[in-house]
Length: 164
Length: 162
Image (cartoon, rainbow over all chains, first blue to last red; front, side, top):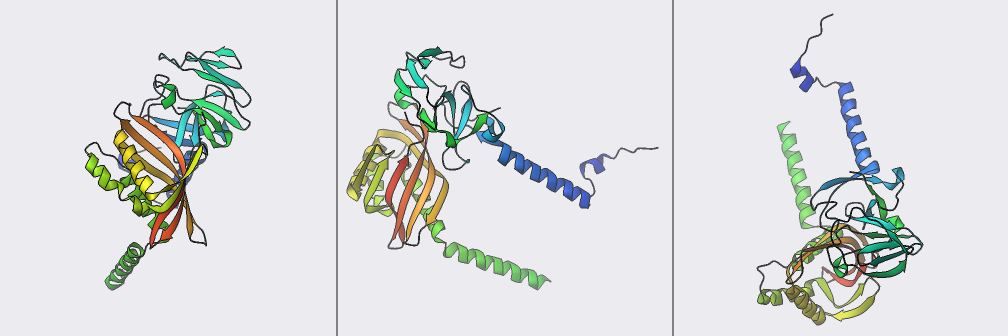
């Protein structure tokens, strides 16, 4: 049996019904993956620095396919999934969250945050996370607390977690 | 064959022109929002006189009285003069400001009122403040007055509650 290697044919295969079906399938699968499973995002802003850099590219895994837990970076929807806010989930509903001299306390106990590498002097009084909500905050604690967007967010706004 | 193609091209061109010159109400609202974005932009080279002149354009976007609700923390009805004054004060506070309306969701009611839900991205740089980026949700209630869509109510929704 003789097998001929034809580079031209490999790059430009002849188009028949089967190849059209193959192309259509690839397009449909890609659309399905990047709309229903993964959400590609480009980050704008510095609130998650130094963990995530301004302008970096990431993927969000939709919450249907994963379980979100404390410490995960979550994507919060504003109106639809075209504009998302990325923050770190630090407390779940019913828990009491507090910052003392930049240190995080959950239910009165110190919680180590290895991802925080900058000096922080935040003080935030104990607050119980309301029902149906979680507490999120950015990793850039070098920003004064008054200027950093963080706090309780409705669970239904969470689209998924950052996986890459 | 060639004639058919020419006819098809002309028909498409006519449809495009009709679409362009007689836009739908939703497109008119989108155009107003784009103009609002450029009105809310503060470029670094814009001087105080420029800001004062720009502030007068508030009448193109707002009704004579406009309700502003900030995250349900405060709510007030502002006159157009107060909006102009507020615009001037805000613009002078920043050296750079850019407000972008994204994900526009427009619904027009039978009574002629339009509801616009949108995400607003704000990029700003103040004299003493570092560069900031923030995202909020805004709901605009608009009314058509003298063929122009104007904002009657503006509500900024709370996403992250400190």
